[in-house]
Image 1 (tube, helix red, strand yellow):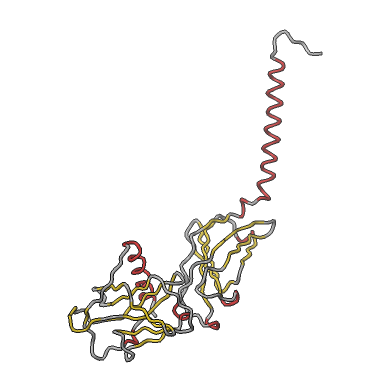
Image 2 (cartoon, rainbow, N blue to C red):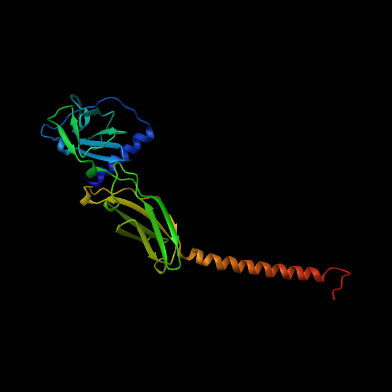
Length: 262
């Protein structure tokens, strides 16, 4: 599946959610006689939503009604929401929520077993971004840890790999790939504050496709702002404050009229 198609599928889903669309109908479109349903693309996201697109002839007619059906084991469900992208001649079917639990499912076009596409969920699943990100700083290292994203089915930890993106104040970018469950950076490598983001991808050896999650929201790290430097600074401030208070009190003590200390 091309990156453009993936982006279109996700953008259409976001549009549907923002518009609160609830359409129960089918579009009548014309298809080229030699066009195959093998051109259909589907993507799973948010663990239970499914979008499928099929390129069609841009001329809208009443000759060829389109009905999409999702089938898993003995369960079949018609697509509840249909949309069409007139500019690209693409027909979209959106399932807001499905319980996709089997190793494969089928999409039937017009309910015909002759127009059926088989999908393996792991191959077309876009995972959610990592969660529970935390940053800690010690005398030597900056440590970034996180948790795996919520997934449709439980994925072994060694089946997921993570990418980290570092962007400094000058927008210089560096991406670290193929990271496991945590990442440690020598403090000497981070000389200025920077923003960090994470994303996740399932490994092909475990049956996943090559679809990357979205990046997390950026968070900042600053090696110069660690607890090792905060404590002496606070102690120094406290000493200065006490010394200043003594000086002020001594000054005020000498100014008390009519009092003569021994």
